[in-house]
Image (cartoon, rainbow, N blue to C red; front, side):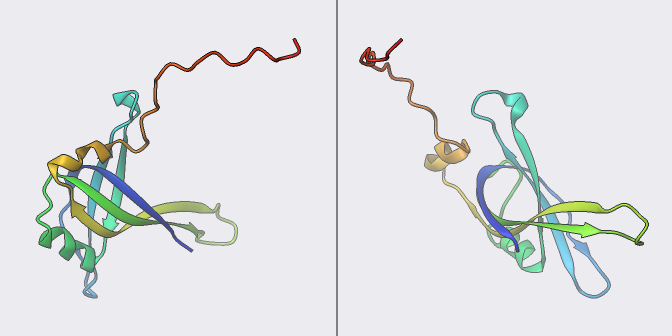
Length: 129
């Protein structure tokens, strides 16, 4: 089972298309998603695209530095060569949809809504202590 994720961020890097002998092709895209509080806690997500996805990147004319909205799926798998070997686990982000965001949509770049920092009134002092 895969889990659907939606992210908005800046295209940090687009990898070359890798073509396999059986006709399969894939490409990766690194999506930079800034942290709302500190730059050093920002995230870089490697998203893998299959043949259909590579066409979507090309058709939308996605370039490094573009702000995009990505829909991808998170999947995980287990690999073990032999029964006595240790289990190894992998997580993958597989791209499904990608679209450029307009300049007026850049406020969506933060992954979480900003907290309202308005002053609150003092609560009623009805505590028993």
